[in-house]
Figure 1 (cartoon, rainbow, N blue to C red):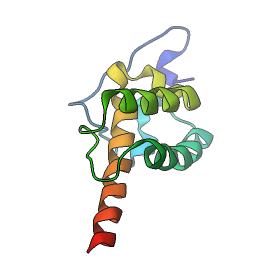
Figure 2 (cartoon, helix red, strand yellow):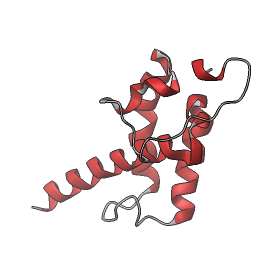
Figure 3 (cartoon, rainbow, N blue to C red):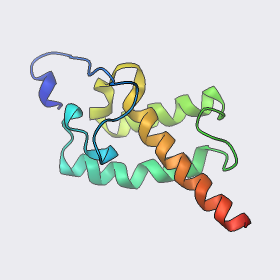
Figure 4 (spheres, helix red, strand yellow):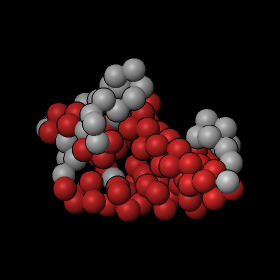
Length: 109
């Protein structure tokens, strides 16, 4: 459970809709544990590869696909549920999609 949520359901607001911590998976506001971070590092890239098209940016992906990926991550990592407007899940998925695109572009060259 998120440390900011002890006893109730508190929503963690976004700071300019981006994760402010240097390491995306270890954002202190969400209070993730080491097992959460380890799991996220495994499931985020595989989720992005499975659902997203390589040639499109995160925002160009179909809304249904983005929603599926976001809800899957929130189901697998409960600490993501406390982020207002899905900003945490969106940020990690967007970053994973950027790395997939970069890899795809390198292969094409």
